[in-house]
Image (cartoon, rainbow, N blue to C red; front, side):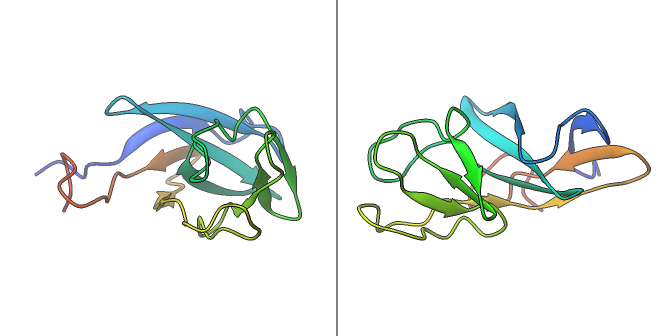
Length: 112
């Protein structure tokens, strides 16, 4: 059986406090580098659907440009109104020097 992890980038490809987008089943996933730790979240604000990758990173949060909503990059937890719904955080791992992500959403292809 396949291990169901998707290669995203290599260590050093994503600058600190920035991200790289991954298209996962027609949904953008943002993979962030926070001080050398890599985390992946849905790339959409749960309040109005704006992509988070176009915003900035502040105190470990992806900040939406439209209303300033912050989402914790490690957990997907919403940190400020007007959003009230968390976004999905995806498992990541680093075998060797590769950054990998797995789609663990219910019903997702490749879910283990």
